[in-house]
Image (cartoon, rainbow, N blue to C red; front, side, top):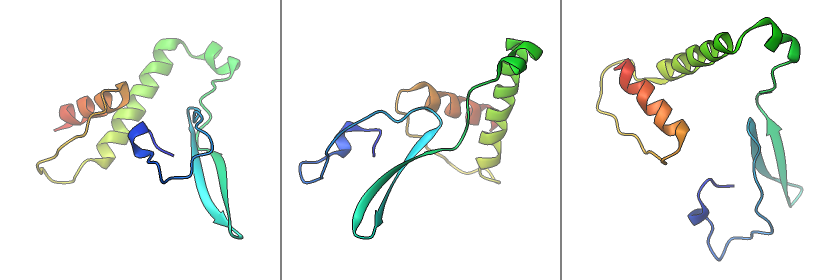
Length: 104
């Protein structure tokens, strides 16, 4: 499993390539001598209709923003150190980097 196509080499066994859905991860493990690929869900992103009716989009977006900022904050080093960031060019790495820069 890789987010980069370049991670696949000719000597790797690759029977198929498929998408990994949002909020899911893939786990490859050796079970009784056989490779087993399992999909695991770590978050249910679907907001129930009752929740979306109770809360407006602005409240939901604000809650997501607060949760993301807090998630970055708790992963920042306790003391100021030089840091580097590998940017993939995607939205997620850019958001995390921007939030980290704001927190410094």
